[in-house]
Length: 343
Image (cartoon, rainbow, N blue to C red):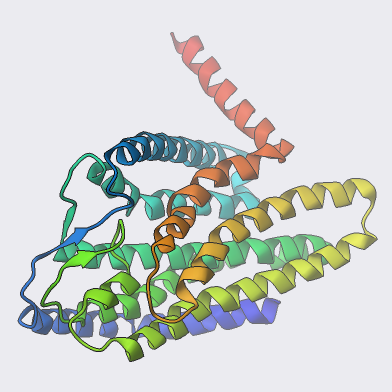
C-alpha cells in the first residue's frame, strides 16, 4: 500500500511538470478554435420545464447549499482551531471539507439562479471554466478520499508504525499530490472541451457544462474523443474505487484481531468513509464509465456527487464520531465563552 502511494506521488510529480506545457497548448488551441465556432453562449435545458418543479427545486437546493456551506465550514473551522488538526485523519477531513465547498460552488449557485429564470444561458468561456473546475475539484476529492483510506489502513493494519508512516511531511505530500492529481486529471478534459468546434445548435441537456453533453452538441464526429474521455476519466474513478475497495477489505480482515471496543471504534470511522465513497463514486462511475452518450437520468445521478454527497459528508463524519462531536462542542463553547467574557 505504501509503495502504491509513493508511486502515485512520483507519477503526479512527473505529470505536473508537463501541466504548464498542456496549459500553453490549450490556450493556443482556444485561440484557434475561436475562429472555428459561431456561438458565444450555450443554453442549459436544466432539470425540468415544469414551473412548479423548478420552484420546489429552487427551495430544496437553496436549503441544501446553505446546509452544505454551514456544515463544511463548521467542520473546517472546528478542526483548524483544535489540537485534532495535527492528527492525519482530521487533517485530511479538513481538506475534504474545503474541496466539497469549492466543488459544489462551481455548479450549485448557477443552478439555483437558473431555476428563477426562463432562459438559462452560460457563456462559452464560463462553460469551459466550469468543465475545468468541476473535474479539478472532483479529481482532487477522489485522491483525498484515497489518502484518507491510506490513513485508516496505516492506523489499523500498521498501528505500531502509524506515527512514522503518517508523519506530517507525508501527510503534506499526500495533500499536494491530491491537488496536483486533480489538476493533471482536469487539464486533458479541459483541452478536449476547448478543442471541440461548435456551430449550432447550442442547447445542452444538462444543468451545467460537462464533457459528455458538450460532445453531443459539437459539430464533428466525437466518438473517438468520447472513448478517450472514458479511458481517462472513467478509468481513474474505477481504478481508485478498486484500490479503496481492496484497502478496506484488508482493513476489515485485520479488524478480526482487535478487541470488541477497538473494533467498534475502528468501524465507526471506516463505515463513515465507506458511505462517503459509495455516495460519490457510484454515480461518477455510472456516468463516466459507459459508451459516450447522455441520458435524462444523468442529471439526477449528477446531483449525488455535486450536491447530495458534499452536503451529507459533515453529517456522516460527525454522527458516529464522538471525538469529533466533543471537539466541536469544546471549540464553540470556548468561543462563545470568550465572547461573553470580553463583553
